[in-house]
Image 1 (spheres, rainbow, N blue to C red):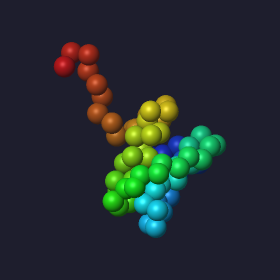
Image 2: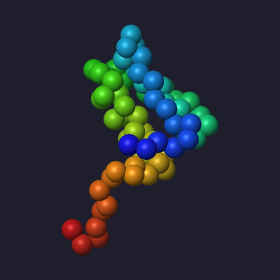
Image 3: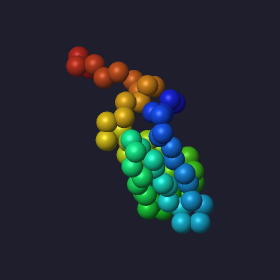
Image 4: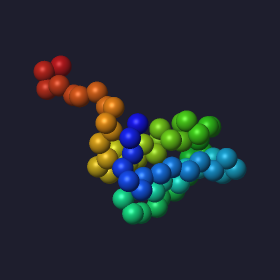
Length: 64
């Protein structure tokens, strides 16, 4: 999946939280998340809700 320039996620194995760097700002999603994969999915969803367009998302049809 392609991220925007400067977009990054960091999983903290001790607190089970994820730090998100997105569009020049940093956020912490407290979780707890059971693993890095789950944390990164939450971080991606967080960014989508703030305007990031996932290049691998399936297009939504008005006719479905």
